[in-house]
Length: 490
Image (cartoon, rainbow, N blue to C red; front, side, top):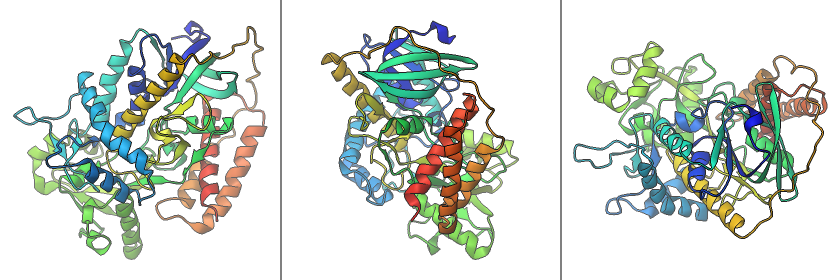
């Protein structure tokens, strides 16, 4: 789609095409005019890479809302917002069941009953999944449903370069290739995903550069707990910047975590062993690596047998095989790397930010659900619940007769020309954060890192650089890194 085909003004602009944005779009009435912007191709997001599944209580005889709430609070170090957790757990099952109506297929047994798996931090089997490609299944089916909506226009390969508040709405500069356009929104939902690319190694795709957080921050929205970064303990230990995730569900199905001596070691650090929450397992691996002077760690699920492994984890089996590892016969090399963000744009129970008409949902938001550490498979649930809450609240505002954004008749085109982005800028940002604020933060490197990041950010903001995708993403990464290190610099 050429940007020239887009209208100047929409009732709602949704930034992002992951599960939060897609499910929000499905919850608007068909008379609400929506533009959905996808920075790359509409299927490419953190959501589509989610392997484990979606946690929800569907069996009230063997599970309960109270148990799911307690598991979430324990994993989050009780830094969670209790009301947000309660809303998530109690309302989430209805949203998950509704995804089935949109065609999402979760694994079922021979009797047609939904199969539930176990993951670290959960005391019950309550996670619905589609093999080990649950996120892709959900995204693919929700995209198909959104594409059928007559009131939603999806613009692929389109990013927001800048955003500002105007009377009764927002002015947004968007870019696709070398083409630019100004669009206006009465309301905006930021569902732009995470920040993984601010780290040297991450499980996140290339789109995860924190753009929505930067846009909200520049407009003055409250950003909360951005230093609550989750490091997944079992990413494939390879040389690539984007690490292949070995799902929590592998340990949930019985895999052992081994050190460089091929010995189980979690009993030294936590009585829950391999099924301790992610932050506990990640710290345990780092402490064990320091104890033994080695970064070689492994998962061993060979004893479950080739048939079980290929059927339960076909995506992980194929992904590891590409790296030369047959997980039915070989140990899987693993090590922690950046995976998820619990903090973000501060929102309330209706996904409202601290700015009027601006909403946020999914990983870019801070709902308070996760506390300091996300419980496995709560992220897709959060995206569904808070994406829907945003749509419902915006619809109420529209029905209440909120004025539309005031759009000027003519505007002068801004000058987007300038110098190219200095080579190595993004690499330097990643190196600084990887060194200063990994699983166990380096207090000495945090202060120096913050000063250097602040210099980079000031140079990007005040220098006259050409507006390109690289420049905008570098600006987002520098902004995110600065906020994180500022939070933790004592």
